[in-house]
Amino acid sequence: MTLSKSFHEYFMHMAMREAAKAAAAGEVPTGCVIVRMPTAADLLPASAKLLGRAHNQTELLKDPTAHAEMIAITQAAAAAGDWRLDNTILYVTKEPCPMCAGAIVLARNTTVVYGLPDPKRGGNSVFNLFDHPGLNHRPTVISGILQDECHEQFAAFFRACRHGLVPKPATAEIPPP
Image (cartoon, rainbow, N blue to C red; front, top):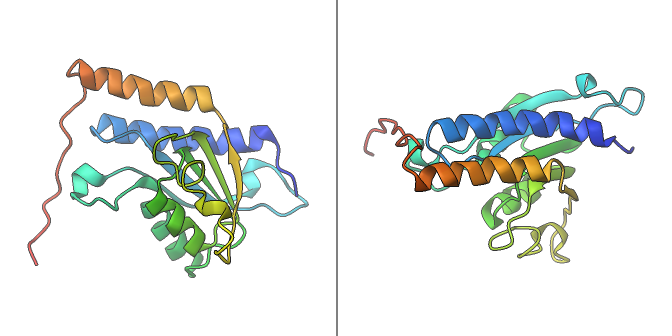
């Protein structure tokens, strides 16, 4: 089943809205959504079921694993009632890091779609985790969807940081163990 570019752009725009929430909270602007793939009979975005959506919350939660992908995978697994996310598409504004790429492989997302590549820490382009021959699951990867828009969102955030225009990230009250 081949999905159209406009199908992928629809959900990447949704991921970009999540990234905007992260930026507004002073977090690195990465957003992610996970959808159940539509049936071959109906390939419109409305036919895909949204299972999870999230944005980076590492500063808020004081948690290095609170990346958008990790939170969205947890939500999607809860919504699906299974940790295996077969027949799902994960959309993320920036190429997943190695930690997130590992979680995606373990969760068995069928397809990963990202906008902006990460030439320094990319789990796909640098570490080749999505196509590693030793792994039992290899998702299909589609890169560059709304790449320019994702790049501008990222660049605008860091420009604002340099000029002191990004709000200080909030912190959640987390009780000690």
